[in-house]
Image (cartoon, rainbow, N blue to C red; front, side):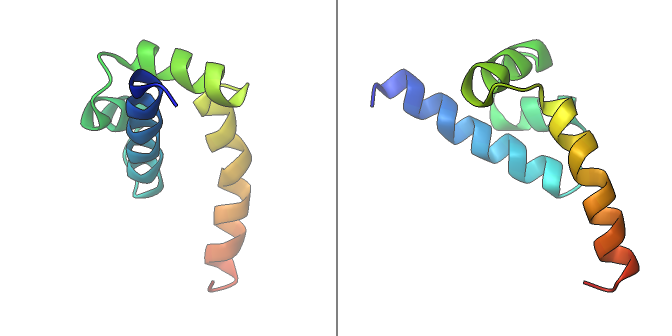
Length: 71
């Protein structure tokens, strides 16, 4: 794996963890070392084939259901 790709992969993981801990996408992108939220979104789309906001929207009902059920 090229070093550049590895660095983006690590930053992506840090950004996703930050989102999972309640940070906004912009805050998570900056905390993970992306130059901008647009750079993060572009890299996310290239890597996973979807926008990060689409993933968050898809996960919100699951998280709400888990909280409701005490999980």
